[in-house]
Image 1 (cartoon, rainbow, N blue to C red):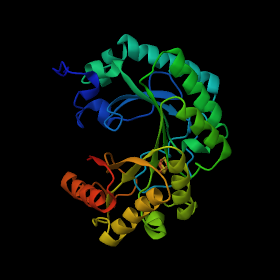
Image 2 (cartoon, helix red, strand yellow):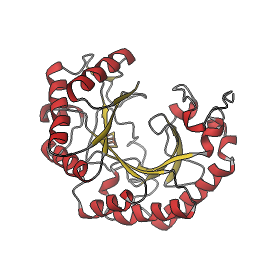
Image 3 (spheres, rainbow, N blue to C red):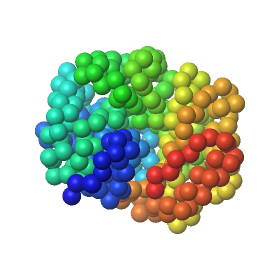
Length: 298
Ligand code: SF4
């Protein structure tokens, strides 16, 4: 059913029960790397670029939705093919063809406005060896299609933000309406080990966030959930807030904090969704303790 709405497309309310919002599968038609999703955090259509078709990640989050039981179609990133798929999907969205896809039938005109082109995927995008080339490719396509309002977004766990090719890629993004959405789910190394289960040291994650935020504003994305039925302890939430203020006191700029929770089945049955009112009460505590703008997506 099309939504009866005649206001600006970017302000069209996005319903969490829409099929295109619930189903964030990273596949479209016969494409290998590029896929469309309607995202509440993007506030509309996001075109994703999967830089991790091999499904490799340096985190092993308890809530990760990536299906690692099914073997990948490919383990390499063919940038020429990524470029061709990205150009094709932009044309499909802009022409209105995407709106006729049954999966996007509820979203109507939203699928004509490309809010962002996002490096995301089945793993951590900064693990590619040539992130700078990937960023340049996306910037070139964005400019060629006159997508002046479209953001280039990097969705990252922050582990690779100190790599030279990533830093060069971020500079390219800075010149092309770039935005970094960086994960921070914990305030202490212990909770980080419990939720994100990475061999990367937590201090390196925080240092990378700080370094990156000192050079341009970043968005922090935090997934809060129940572990074995319990919510994040208040001491952990305090440590999390201290990490945020530590970044800003070091001269880092945090544009906004996005809080979200589990939306789909998790691999660990004891990692479960946090109810909307609880997420909102956590958001309020973070606002009060840090003074930062916090948006929730329950
Ligand atoms: S960082 Fe993302 S892709 Fe990697 S394990 Fe966590 S949720 Fe999955």
